[in-house]
Length: 559
Ligand SMILES: Nc1ncnc2c1ncn2[C@@H]1O[C@H](COP(=O)(O)OP(=O)(O)OP(=O)(O)O)[C@@H](O)[C@H]1O
Image 1 (cartoon, rainbow, N blue to C red):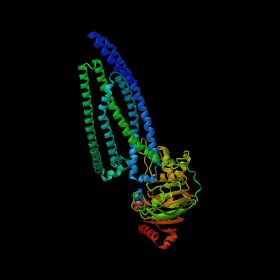
Image 2: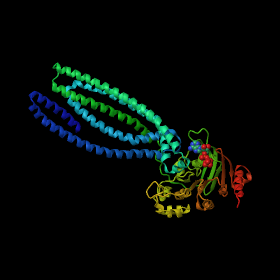
Image 3: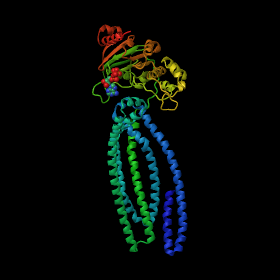
Image 4: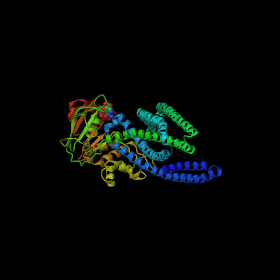
């Protein structure tokens, strides 16, 4: 519509100036110009109204698009395999996808809208132009070429720069998180680490800023050169038209209007050219976005857990992506229904890695997992059977209720079940004393929020495992933050609490694994011993030595 108005405006201009000049005299010129002025004001008013409507629609559309596309990236990120998170390249790709989803998808829409608007105006001006001075069209096209080429070079350059800077940016953002995060605040203050981190951030950003500024300067040089080349060409065309008027080859009204049209046309062509390049540039980022979304794992289908009878790791080996030596080698472990099985060993011996494999988080590189006597092909099926309390469990900054109910996101929310799980984990007492009980927000970063001690958080993580109600429970150092009474109580009642379930327990407190049905001792990623507490102490190997060391340490404590 505005495009059509522009075309009409140009024709009107020619008609008015032509009529005025033919009739001669200021009165006649004024008579012709009054309707022209009224018409122009009306066109401008109408055009402005249409633009305002389009802008509002565009803003709403941008928000809807942002929500949709960021949602797709989050879906892909939550579906991604856990080993992907060990790979820096995956993080770069994810960051580029986030960048593309945040800005570029919206940019495509705004640019496409702008391209359509400008292209319509261009068509209108070109149509009018063709009626008056078609022979100037190639010149208008040529004058826009340098700007189009400069924009294309800029697009490639910027995309390359963003790729190169991706990892550096992630490091800088990590430093930002360290300096602004609540969890990190105490240690950073205790160590007086702030200035050092700030300096590192400054160095990282300095490097990024230097490279970005160099690229921007290159863009600027290209843009200026393109601008002057295009304008010099247009000037040459103006000179040629002027020459044609002086030689009466062209009449003055047509020449004036053609010049105005040429100016409008080349300006708009330059805009369309650079807009197309914006689309081209966004297309590169959108390619990243699409690859990230489509390459990620498909949405897992819900698996109905079969009754758990046994889980076996047979000759399992595993190496973390990028690591130069295996974390597990030829490991064989058996867990039968209802058993309590313990993993012990020095730091870094592979206990957590084995627990992650047995709970279906990592796929073994060699060997196999058998669930109920059948090879595990779908790790999701194994995960559905398992509740894990990690050593470094997550403290969700949501309500206490959510922190427990997150154990079973696939079933309808059950407040009574949450309460029972909290009671089993010894969390009910302190939760009811919070200002809003189970509904208290467990973060001081949000209004009316509260916080818990680390041991209380650990009890919440254990409650989450109870609430999950899975047949296999993996407890990785579940009492590391519990007080001695709570620890003794949990271990004393472990069997009773998890009655009917199979428990894999990782613990450095060997007294707590005495009653396990089987104990596996890991060393440098291999099982070096296994058996019951009695058989292993009798064997007099690693387990017996570790157990004696701990027992002696307790006995030496003066009473
Ligand atoms: N994400 C990882 N990427 C690369 N190597 C890892 C990763 N996690 C652990 N490792 C390495 O794998 C080996 C086994 O680690 P694991 O966490 O399984 O040991 P652990 O016995 O549980 O130790 P701890 O008692 O300290 O918890 C170690 O050498 C460790 O450095």
